[in-house]
Length: 167
Image (cartoon, rainbow, N blue to C red):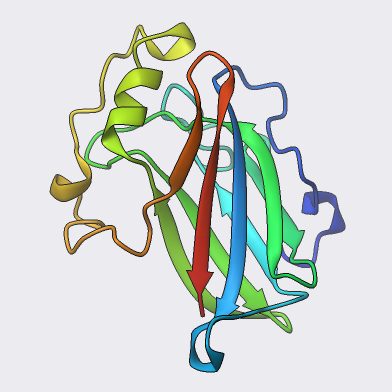
């Protein structure tokens, strides 16, 4: 996917319904005092409101994309708030590449109060709340301190999820 220019895009919604979400990411080099990493490639992918993934549960390439970081180590994606599937807390997958090599694979976690608010309305309401919390999720069970997004916005207007990714 990293070599396919069609996946380099900011808007990855592909018309999928849901609460608008901007994912604002910053890649920093931890060993260098958290200096920004320019020209890194960030790949993101997540499920739709009903818990389905493109390329896995259905055909297509929705809710997947790549962006290069700018001189400040920043990249942003326009998407929708992810749904959930059994056994996992609500999350977005992230992989960072530098010079074409994968240097970090991680996930973005969401504050549970924000997720609960989103799941009470719109296309999410019929599925209800995610029964798996961050602390009960096998991936996040060791804690979400470095993966928990800083949120702003509302269910009505949409959210921005910001996360710094240390490599």
